[in-house]
Amino acid sequence: MTDITTVWRADGTAGDWQIAQGDLQSGSDLSTAIYISLFTDRQARDDDDLDGSDRRGWWGDSGESVPIGSRLWLLRRQKLTTAVAIKAEDFANEAVSWLIED
Image: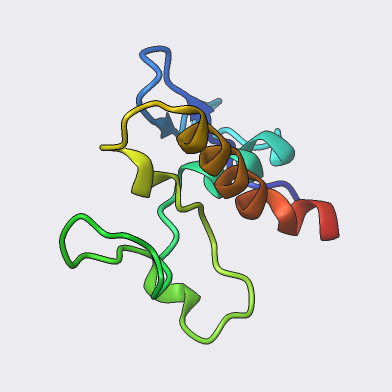
């Protein structure tokens, strides 16, 4: 059995599901896993610099050893510098590390 496919919208702002033959499209499991890993908000760590008090995250991660998503959302108001680019790469690697291990 395959997962429901997440398709990245052409305007580049979000992923979405599509209907195929009267049902949700399935397949493309690796692409879907990468989209969810990168573009779902992982809860901020205690040592992360927050803009406000919302640590985001997903309630389903409670008690899990590997949380879902990435901390890329923490960079949304950062000025694009080399240091921020390196941090974005680190956050992306952290988000998909479960795929490498799996």
